[in-house]
Length: 338
Ligand code: PEP
Ligand code: MN
Image 1 (cartoon, helix red, strand yellow):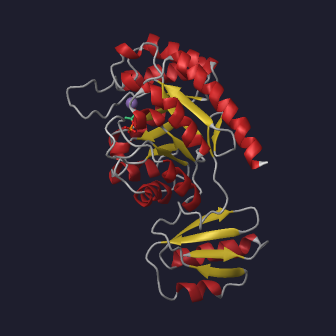
Image 2: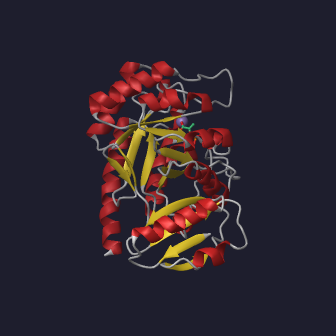
Image 3: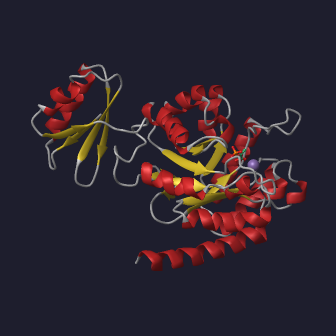
């Protein structure tokens, strides 16, 4: 249920609405827009609720939220949300570029990659310390040692860091070292993990599961938002299709749809969608053209020797070229909007 306050309603109206919602055993979530304040009443709905709330002086209207997700929906928050991670702002207009290796393999390698991606204009560093692998015998990541390496690079190069969290028991540990938690595609429906992250203070990058609808994805975001963590950025990384020359099928339509149905920022991961480096650039550009607020790409100094996802890693030269293309695209898109 959405309670829309009259424009310019004083703070005590807001307070009265929140108190009433809580007395009725529901949670109140406030969304302050440029012109209006909206309060979302989330929880078991009492049939009397609309009339009770409508009778409060200063309330303009009470309307149901038609979507199954509430706090993630654009009905709840009309303007695009922004999420700030260190010096990077998702949804702030300029695309945020996240680059780095799939996995943190060793200190030298990550430092070198961090230095080059930063020199080419990346805003954030990625790298997995805990790797969710399909094969239990594949490299599973360096764990806490990997987190320490990421933290060192963050300090040395001034790049905020995002890393994947695979286990709800590690939330506190991972939060100690990095700036943003990544929920991987395989864990999009790990509701225990989502609940735990909802209690955390760190921004979250929520990937879409390979067989999940946009609605499922936004419901997963809702788990995190309803836990109190409002800093959620969505990430489209391809879904399971029938094409077998690519690892997954990048769903640019999902980017456009999520932008319409939700206020949350969204970025695109062309690396896991393509599974091969020659397609990463075109897919990154397609994602940005469809409205993505940034990209996350895998880059490696020596992709042939990568312990994880080598075939899809961009070389440093390819990354530099992609950055130039993104700058051209930004100019072309600025012309389109103006
Ligand atoms: C990753 O980012 O390295 C990763 C495992 O991604 P995904 O969860 O999209 O497969
Ligand atoms: Mn990977």
